[in-house]
Every structure is written in C-alpha cells, then in structure tokens.
Length: 172
Image (cartoon, rainbow, N blue to C red; front, side, top):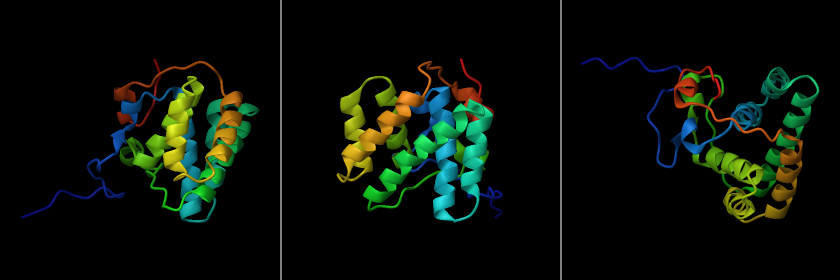
C-alpha cells in the first residue's frame, strides 16, 4: 500500500478550533497584517532574519512610509501578548501557501480582536484580548491595539475565499 506524498510543511486537515482564513471576514489590511505577524512569529520560534521579511512585506503592501510604521505597531501588540501569555502561541507557516490559509485558534483570536477593534466592537475586542493574554496585562494589549488601529486605514475590503486558497489574494 502506498501513501500519498506528504507536503513539505506536513499538509494537514484543519485541527479543532482552526479555520480557513476566509471564514472570519478579515479585510485586506488585516489579512496582510496576519502575514506580517507570522514572519515575526517565525523569528520568535527560530531566531534569525524572518523579522526582516515582516518589514519588507509591510513596505511592499502598505508603502515605504506606512509599511514600517504599521509593522512596528503590530510588533508592539505582539510583544505585549508575548509577555502576558503563559501558553505557546501556535501559528501557521507564512511561506507555505497551503499552511498560510489556516488560522490557528490563537491567530484567529488575535485578528478577531484587531478586526473587532477596527469596527468599534470594544466588548468583543476585550473578550478576545482576555483569552489571548490569559487574563494577564489586558490593559496593555488594549493600549497597543488602539495605537495600531489609529494608524490603519479605515477602508475595509474583504478577501474572497477563492483568492485566498490560491495563495494570491485579491480583494473585492
């Protein structure tokens, strides 16, 4: 009996509490910030230069003046979260198109917190932040989220499921 070839990143079905990236209604800005965050996470998991890729992608997508500012504000959010969490932060591999369409539970919570804040749903944001920070330092995380949201554009365009699954994201 032969087994189908394995994907280099261990292509796998969704685990409990994971979702396809299009299932949570992220807009193009939030989706791009997710990709940038994953490069920062990669740098935390395996120290190296993945953080440089985060800034390059931010600049490529948001432009030379806004990209680095957005990336730095996102990094501040992630740093607060890292200091407050006791549990490991599970994330999907940003360099694998098959893995990049999977939102882990904690990625989903982080980006639902951001999306809710951008849409003025502060109570929902606070609930997600409490889960992310495991009840520690929630106020600091809210402050950093606010700083990030104040920098971001207001325009909200949603990604389409077909586009995200193809690895090339277009927006409607």
